[in-house]
Amino acid sequence: MEDFKRWITAESGASLPKMRIGKMLRNREMGQYRKQLSRKEPFMSDKWSNCTPARKANLANRFFPNRDETTRVTSFALSRCFHLPNERLFTLSQDNVLRFHLHQKSQRYRLLNSYHAPSEYRIITDITPSTKGDHMAYTTLDSYLYYFHVNRINHPTRWNLFHLVQPNAFSWNVCSSVSFNMEDNYLFIVEAGGQLGVIRIDTPRHHRFSFNAHQRDILAVSSSKCNPGIFYTAASDGLWKVWDNRSSRNVYPVQLSSTLSYDIAHIDSDSQDKYIVTTSCCGTRIDVWDLRFPANEPFANYQQQNLQEAISIISSGRRRDEEEFFLRAKFSPQITGHRYIYVTNSIGYLHIFDIVTGEVRSFHQQGTLIYNSSWHPDNSEIACVTVRLIIL
Image (tube, rainbow, N blue to C red):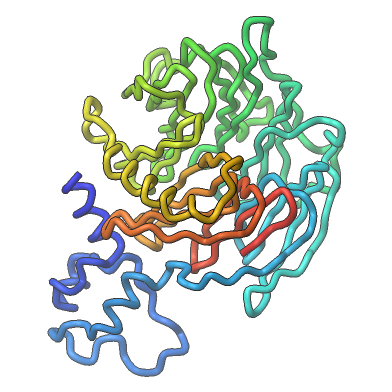
């Protein structure tokens, strides 16, 4: 745990008070600090002087959404959102309409265009963009995968359609998760019965195969952000596994661990393959795991303590008949040094956990379920979709 905190502290810039600027530059411990182009004075007036308190605070918290201000982008019932390159925001509504929004000044977004998905009468279970943001893929409840280029989104006949393994009478799982690898040449798709499908999409024939990754249904798949061959799976048996696509048809995982006490519904990793964060199916527990120590326990006590604090803070302001559960815990972007873990919940809260200080910040949208969220990779904006609209 102490090693985890030290790494997060260095990555996020919170260690700056103990370091001179010259040494900080040589050691590359700036926490992804970027100089503003509009700034006229030089960044380093005295190479060997320490940062001013104001600059230290700015570096440590610059990309944290400190203001509890919201902006409505659309009033449709939504299920997914994520940020795309060139200041675009993508949303998926519950009526299977794909919308692209363009960021403008003062956190305003303008609708660029919208398209009806060719699977208009099929329920979309998951959708994800490629690493470059030029392709997308989504899965449907009836075991189909749609893969397409963003520039050809208005030509459904040019989309790629794959039929996946369907659930049998003894399995209720559906194709609920899909992920691109880092180099966008493989797609990993959750199939029924513990099967994981792998499709190579950089070849004309789209070579594909599947293998039995878990004994029980897989609930989540995620890809490494720094290694194109590494991906992660989590299942209803409480196991999460690390796979290397370069091994022989993925017969054995390169690493696995078990929660024993709960199923895993979502898994996410940092950009250096050092840590992962898992969310339980019941939505009451978030764990952080150190990938360098396969047999260790998660930092459950730390995360559970913060969750309990957050619940105790908001419980006085909600009705007794409202049950709270958490959805899709993720690491904050690389530009923040992955210092924060953010997660939405069923009663309109967005919780942000500061791993360095242990603090919990909560933002509230009254009376609605926040289904999905996306932290902008370059600034302090977090987009959240609800059953009513999208808020920022």
